[in-house]
Image 1: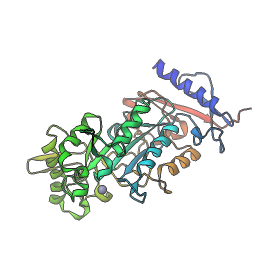
Image 2: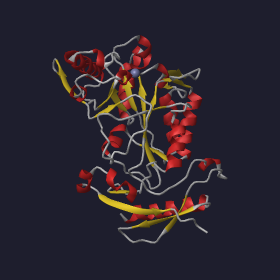
Image 3: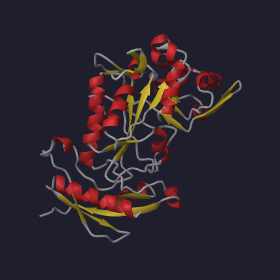
Image 4: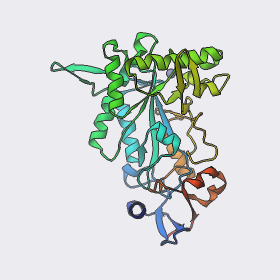
Length: 358
Ligand SMILES: [Zn+2]
């Protein structure tokens, strides 16, 4: 993994160049490579683009975020992000060295991302119109540039180093304003379009009934009927994740991930909760892909910018080492790794001391 290692060193060097206030010594124990000086906290950085960078020390046992969006439109409120603010969210994540990955890749720790980046995932619940709208323009149907999908596609085009993807937890059988993005004539086209363009469709229940209100048969009916309805439009698509409606667990937990209704089996490899908490790294011993925390997007005290500041301050943020086959983390995390991972990954503990640079 020579190239990755080089990238990592370049990243470290870059971070040093960007703002070299307080320094920190990092030693790579296993390889014995030269000590690197990395940038650490600077409360008042010069460059607004790196306003929240505090530390590039790889920490693949640090915290990650799965962002949760609901409505996209006007005006901004507790459950609604304006298109303008959604654009700002993406810019904030881009400027602060986050890197988009899918929910499934995050949950399985398939994180082949550049050194110095923090993986995050985007999710949308309830399939409202503002998430994905087609409009007519010059006699042609196209994606509305002001819906979430249009904004993500535009951002991706402008930033090829930021391969945005997202999971859509849709509702196939609820009131018209939330039924598969609220344009009945385009239900099938939209689902097909999302899959073709690298997005995920996930289960959010047949029509959003919280699973704690249902008996075992009811849970299987609501999750199974979702799959059945979706397969009418996209017959070969396998639904692989579930976002619990209102975040409520079924009384019988195993039925969230596996079950059967009539002739339909469902198998959710990942189950998402409702915000507001960051998730531990998928390599952490406490990570459970059948109960993944999410962060409610927005400018609140439980929003992503708030968590990022906290993680930067406490140095609990995930930073990639740039090598998908190696898990690198400060040795203070030694007791927190999922020990089964040592079969599949090289584990690299680093010593981080707080020596001030001169
Ligand atoms: Zn919902």
